[in-house]
Image (cartoon, rainbow, N blue to C red; front, side, top):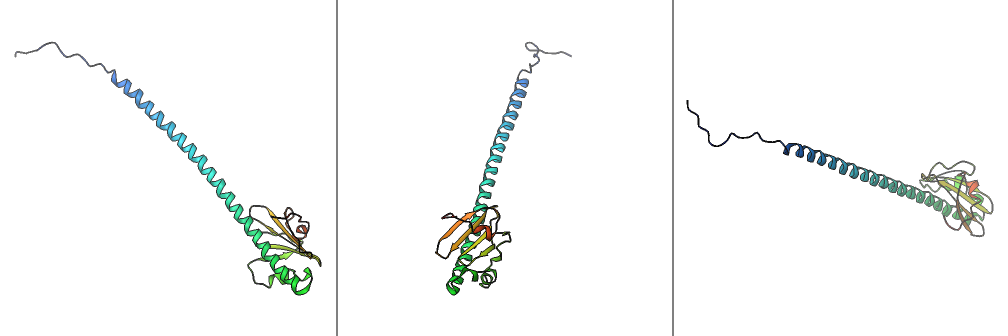
Length: 169
């Protein structure tokens, strides 16, 4: 058999492009991994900040609920004062008779929630306390002279609320 060859034999190709492609591929994978880590970390921080903001809003709502319960109780206490000329009539039994969703406990008992108001009565003054889910106990005190005082503190009792002195919650 005869063979025919035209020109020289083909040379073996050099594989220079392959290592370059491997290095570029690894760089691409590392870049994507770094980007994902950065985005995930930033997203995690954003999620944590969102959780903190939501928790603060829930705490504020609970604070408002406790303050509203105290204002409702004070309104009922003022009705008792108008009917009897003394705050002593604005006791737990009287306040409970209005049928509100608020529970009332004696002034030496702790408030256990925004809708559980501890009430202290005296002839010339009336005090109440309500515990917010945020952990803040709010106080309100009314005197015969018509002065309303506010405060917060511990213990969360109507008796402690009798020492409220602030002009606002």
